Image (cartoon, rainbow, N blue to C red; front, side, top):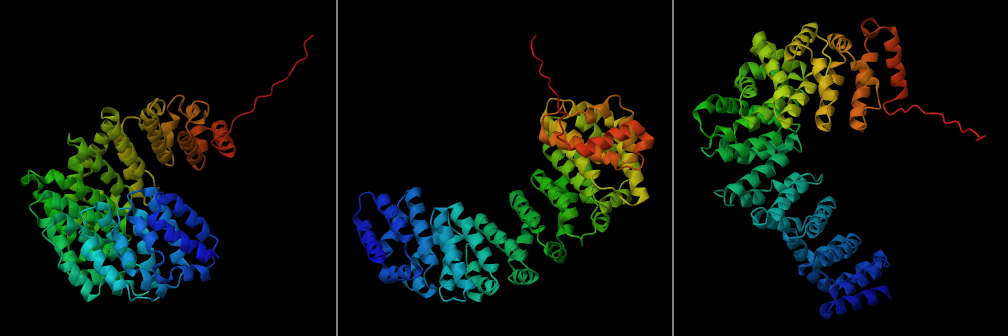
Length: 505
């Protein structure tokens, strides 16, 4: 009965004036049908009238149709679905509405995972020849996403993508079109990150060689876009291997060296610094000491930018310096390539920035310092270096941070408390804190702070102080006892007040 009812509704849909009402009625009927009934329904192209509704310029209508098609196609045998509706499913990947594209992709991913590979080649041809070059950015981006998803399939995903016909189709696209060319680069950067095998197959196509050559382009925008892809590549497990095999660091170092001769270097230098900052954390196999020794222009440019008056590159330089100096290798490399006095000048400059610059830049400087003092190094000489850098920031960093922590601006207040929490693990910072009148009382006072993040940051300071083996010596027994009690109570403790009701006389 349900099959007959659904079939009649599909016939009525062809000539209905209010198609949305009919589609919603169909939706209710479909949800009551079992798998056998649904399989019977998809025979003989009975869903054609529903599929035609996907071309209506109405997001609500299309969404309702997709809901029905998801139920029907998911519960129908794979061979029946593709025998009846292969072409609409292929062309669905070019639809303007996302849910239709997702429905199309899901069916072909399911086909690959079920080893039903017959329709996949035709799908790939449309993705490559009509999807990637599509004038609509959302369609083109989804095509790149779809090809990456297919490459990730356990069942021969990479074999499909690196099929000779597919690669040939990609090679025949319009490589003179900058936008299209970089979409292809992005695709292979995403595929490369899947596995070592994917990286090898990607390199063998020669496409990534073309991308690296973009770094030598006279067009600074092309160089900048190429660097953005390299930054994205750093997140991949095989990213560092790729960067080494193509000698990318050497090329970028040369770009920095030649930046003074290039009037358009302002496009590329900031992105190279972002790349450099990411390098410190992209892989355990990266030796920042060796990188800085072999390619000194990275750190030299970063330090130079910190002293520059250009706020755009200054903010990036602060982020980069913080990222490099936050790890022991980075600190070690600073000692190798910079004179001690030069680092003191850098830290003094950062101390000036957090006082004199605009709010955005001050925040970046405070965050960079938080990164630098986040970890406690085991090496005694690095610990001494951190103390020297701390002293170079200001005559009393704790006093400066106390002033910031009392400001009405939440972002500055939180950044200052976060930094204070990070430095509070060091003995010399604890002594600085103890010397500031009212600072310990302010840290312990929950009533003066209403913001949750700031209360948690203040609590982190107290935890760091109580965990110090020097706490009793520096603060004294009574204050140490108060600190420990504060930790037991937690960051949001509120002392209850007893109210006694008195009978009136």
